[in-house]
Image 1 (cartoon, rainbow, N blue to C red):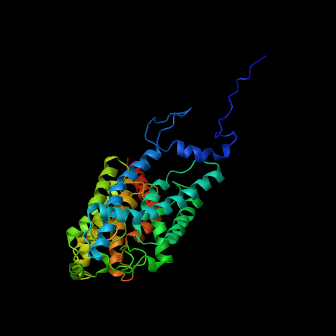
Image 2: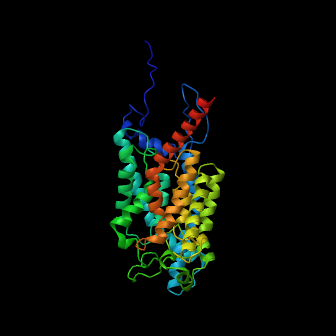
Image 3: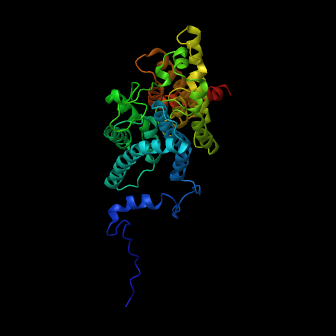
Length: 376
């Protein structure tokens, strides 16, 4: 009698009893290890670095800003109530305040990602690993959790999944979540009472961000020196205050080749130029270099503008893309009194125009080559 040597599919493999859960199980199985699968045909690069590993490196780069942000949440609270807490006490208070934001961000976001993967019978996208890490860092610490859940759901569904998932979106999902919060619940995202945490039963503690203090005299009166702004010991969104922590992340991203230094440098150049023009024209008395350490400029430049999916792809286009982000950010800050921070709008606007920038760059290059060919 001939023996049946046909290999039966595994429990969670396609064709198995629970094959419909294959994408979910595969996502967890390959989260911290590189799968042993290899390509069967064609020429392909064999490398241990895949999309999951790249995204995990981005998460590692964000960690310094997240850790400092947690400490700063406790520091701002203890300072406003007149207490002198230890470093550990400040950090623990901030950790407990920020943890619910992360739980909501990942539970809602990954829940939607897994649901869409199951419906489409596709692998679970890894892109939300980074978005879920970023969203809690760009909102006020006391953002209501139910509004955050709505914002995450909106960003994942309408910012990613309707376009096909990670790699197909043209807007940064994390910034889209923040934009949803800002325009849908402005009272929860602006004013002087949303930036410093408070305990249950307490009234909200006021603490205006540097961008809301007016000119240079306002910064001085509020006690915000350039060093305070650079170090990050000021009120603001959870992870956006410390330029030092953000620069550590920038070094990691540039050293690993994940983020474009051209976008970062050109963004800084655009902000400095418009800031200088604003000084010359008398639009502001704040020195141009202060624009680099206030608000979410540094965080947006390093972690948002350099998103390889939504940014310009051509090398020349990256210079143009970054420069316009920095320039538009400062223009909004100087000439829009109703909206002190311009980084979110600048990046979302340039996300929209990134394909056009690349098209113009490539078209110009093709025309130059055609002229050289005709001349020859």
